[in-house]
Length: 374
Image (cartoon, rainbow, N blue to C red):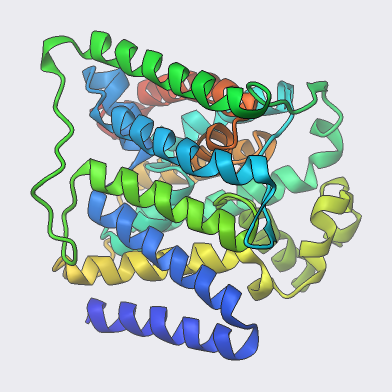
């Protein structure tokens, strides 16, 4: 049932977009589906990796992320330095560093541990998992992002330094790779003798599960494909305030076009277009369709179960923090951390520090909601 439903969503969605919008949106939908399948089969969870790192001194998940980042840097930097690939202009994510980014990343880190996932993790576990509380996280995520957009007039005026790269020209690559190598060495020291090796063999390509390294390579390559097709790296949470703001407008609650957040010329056009013409929306929905298909291929049976009250409250609080934090912090683990470092931007390196601090706080709060710290 899951296989048929997931395959139908992936194929019919691509066919509908091909007929109505052309090959590029259809291909972005399929890229999203491939990302969803990769995330599900590799169980590639940023929130889970940070939880194991902080609670169990187990850094295999973060080491897999370092492999992903190194490969992405090798793929991204030649294209970004050229400025275009096969006539398609490409740009990286280089965001300002200020109080909004620092507070946003910290709130997002707390939300990851309470909500049970980050942006990508929430989407793929909601679509492919059996824990119904992830849908609560997702809806609260959208609500929190919409609240942050509504509140933009206040926090958008906070002080910030202009976005800047880690270096100039080709210097970005050795500097970034050296930074990743130092983090790798620090992780091995932190883990000590209990460090788990990163396995490469032992996965089933179609049905899963995949070793973490397969997921790391797949995410790096698919993010590069996104750069080539969309002209910018993979993003997830930029769609959430858009969904919420369009819902607010359709219900007649307010006119988001007059919010400071949407008056920004880099965002205003997205609010005026149909939501299904938004590239991030297409990839997010495609990701969920791909995760649903992956769950069927993996033999996952049954649908979603209702959560108990305290875990449901954790999802509600965590989702609100995730959404608000993602908008303040210029994205989630995908666009702010992954996309930022792959683009050679300093903000990606800065973002992860308050995000990890927030994860540590979230871990301490989990038992109050009936959730394990492990």
